[in-house]
View 1 (cartoon, rainbow, N blue to C red):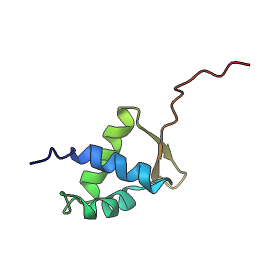
View 2 (cartoon, rainbow, N blue to C red; view 1 turned 120 degrees about the vertical axis):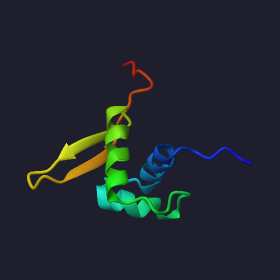
View 3 (tube, rainbow, N blue to C red; view 1 turned 60 degrees about the vertical axis):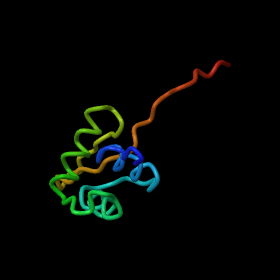
View 4 (tube, rainbow, N blue to C red; view 1 turned 135 degrees about the vertical axis):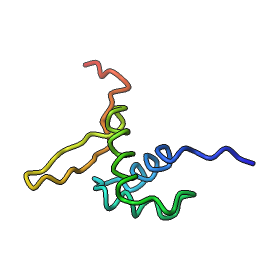
Length: 81
């Protein structure tokens, strides 16, 4: 049996593949094709917050209180002039 990714790993890969900002509601929809298809908004919210704490996603809260998550930008190579 192949090793399954964790729920958060699956969500992170889905967010990266989606390529656009993700809300909690969208994250729950992205999880419908996963082995955890019954993942609801509360679980998706918890996983998004965990990914943000790990530095993999950046959270931005709008004026209306909604939080949107963006893939975090990491610098892997230095650019020399």
